[in-house]
Image (cartoon, rainbow, N blue to C red):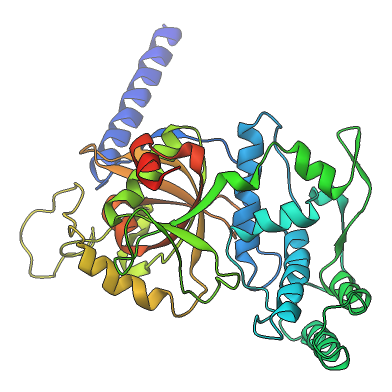
Length: 382
């Protein structure tokens, strides 16, 4: 008899819990369901101020190594920062001081750095003497600027190697440095041989944006603050941006996204980024007697003119958001969203971006050209 009572009690408890879950689901505006994902590595906290590009680029390489069958790898993001300073120093001297030496770069710069200096896993990176996140220390920048200034002045602007020892020593002290020889998974490597074995080819990765001042489906130099090396971007139509992201993920490729995550357009309760035609979900006036409908709110159909008006001011400064795009989700009305996660904060914080949000707030994408939808790749001549 006791067994029968216990069974009835458990059944009632299960029914009540199930009912609670149904009610809870009914109160969701979007009730997003993940439809597909690409395997990526866990996100990392920022290692040094203004170096989020390094986290984003490294995260893309790590995802590509997984796709290439190389397994998960925790790359040393500070190694890319260290070597970016070396790369930009050479450009500074070659340009007679016109190229500034700062930490700010494009996420695509990791591929230039990988090709020239290699890369290493975190286990092969030597920690610096100083805290790389120290906001009050300007010593390193003073040493670097002074070293380059002396090289330009004393060598009459001619490029020599005499500045490198002092310059690199300062970087090692304040940012750290890679080991020149190391073991990883039982094999011997140098930074260059490790990069070569990753299966990642720098020439496969392209930058894309949408700027109606330029010809569509042609490359051009995007004039933005962090494009210090005058890299070329392929220009696509605004509506192509979400199509490219969805197509890449569907083809098994992660993408690095850079743009503005405008808090006014984010419904945090369900981590949804939208361009609402009216109020955001959950906003209800006190005198509003209309019963609330729990479904996705209507969005603005962002025009090319609206995109351009929002886009041009974004190029004037930097410091926006880097995401690793890795998934696709759908809401209860089967609308599609692009899933990205914060590339510069540990914990895999995700956001689901609508097509209109992507169209309005994307500055650029970094993607493997092999992951592009076939029709767009053909238009780009790739």
